[in-house]
Image (cartoon, rainbow, N blue to C red; front, top):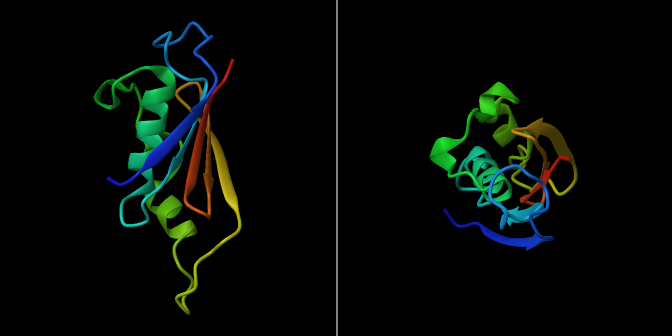
Length: 107
């Protein structure tokens, strides 16, 4: 997967790893499922390995619909506006049309 990330803040909540960031921003690779990027962000913020997360994306949002929502238009042009926001695993997840995925730990 080709995602890059930058984190802001230090882990101050009592959930997960104390060194985990409170917020992380990843760049989603449009050739992969956005759910993979969301899971990676939640794992980073909660300090929990992806394979040990207690829930799946489809418990919160339809992953196929999320992929299709920001797919290229019928004429082939990219969608450059919009976002979807949903809670997951004690985090607030924001998925943007410009391939950003922001995961913030809820307090």
